[in-house]
Amino acid sequence: MNYTTLISAATLQQNLNNPDWIIVDCRFALNNVNAGGYAYRHGHLPHARYADLNNDLSATVTDYTGRHPLPDVRVLAKKLGAWGITNQSQLIAYDNVNGAFAGRFWWLLRSLGHYNVAVLDGGITYWQQQGLAVTTTLPLVKPKLFRPYLDASCWLTAQAIQNRLAQKTINLIDARASERYQGKQEPIDPVAGHIPGALNRPIQLNLTDNGLFLSPDKLREQFNRLLTVKAEQVVHYCGSGVTACHNLLAMEHAGLTGSKLYAGSWSEWIKDKNRKITQQTL
Image (cartoon, rainbow, N blue to C red):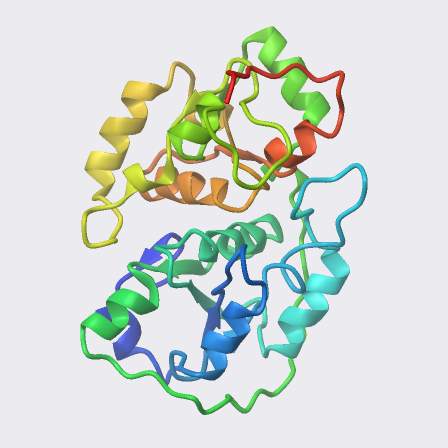
């Protein structure tokens, strides 16, 4: 069986020693870029590799990009191969924030044509709550070859967002907390507010109180109440194109397939002062 959205801790535990399964630790902290690597070295799931959001899952920031530009396809593919990943691998990504960063890895692999990738439901937090083991032993990795098959239809550019909003052919969903969406506070980016016409669905709404994703039925019901277009006409964004993948993952898990990502997101949008914003006084 292939896993393409979420995987439970119990199922992963049963397959820990499967050589075709590869686990990737995606822990990261925006306020301390070294925290994820430190946490990995001090305890991770058995056999897990570590993927750093800034260094592995993003390109270098420029004057025109958001805070986490999409990585170069060839560079990322080479890193995946160095981690022992092939096109036949079943991949599992996890973090310690209920999939907020692991979702980025999940989406990136799908954009490279690799769909056998899932996020560990509940992450390392739930894993440890179930009494399952972590280790400080680094995995012995034999490099392999990963061939990317890029699907550029997975994301939209800022210009495409402007055009399709004007044509009213998309629902744009902002994954940030409501305070940031409304422009009442902005702790990260220099401008507060949101893209005009965007709806708001904070990623916390995808989760139960114990940090697991809601059932597919509940997610489908909630998204259907929000949307006015088909799933493939939905586009997600956030501050930098990372946590928006959480909403995309939730929709896929709910069977609402084909939504897209505005990869540059708010931090790219505000780089061009000609782009309109909806803003309230802080």
